[in-house]
Image 1 (cartoon, helix red, strand yellow):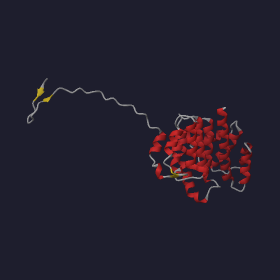
Image 2 (cartoon, one colour):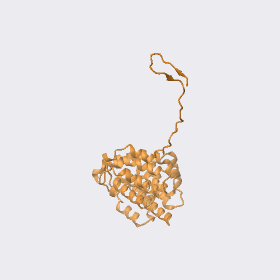
Image 3 (cartoon, rainbow, N blue to C red):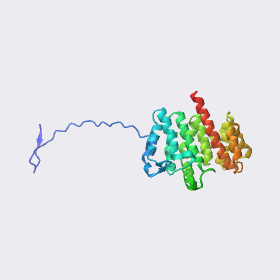
Length: 266
């Protein structure tokens, strides 16, 4: 072995090059958008329907996990934490971004994505009449947050399955804004849809996202779905056409998506 003597050193240093082992990079699963949104929020610092909302991450991960009874129960519990009986809570605002990420996850089943989109819809519609007066400020926060996440839902609205498209159509109506210019054009095309209910709520939605006042006759068109919608219109007949249109679109889309998902299970 060759050596070189180093002046001032007590020992000889080898000039033989050490064996360098190749660096093996361990593959790490990419962090999902849902996990990324969960990780940036201290959920325990927010109040949900039943106290601190630190349970939310576990519920979300169960919803995006394997299908089955646990998944269904988790979605139901998640709904209760952020929007129990139509009421909003502190956690409802940051939860909107997580729910948006869930809707965008194309790996999830159609019924899961659509179910989460319906939760977004009910939260966006919470500023409509009938909610407790003390929630006004929170309702405004949620509405503004809902408008902020709309662009992120553009692809889901344009390319997603039919049930998801209907739910997001109504979400745009209650927030008063479209996902994008392409989204607005898609709404216009749905006005001529073969399904009269989809066409009816698309017509109202187009007016709402365009700042137009929906015609009173158009508000009544979705009533062909069932008696509940007709009763809703009668009960709130004194509301402005814009407000009433938002309520009708929300309720009609909710019932329509539920009916469509039930048909898929048959």
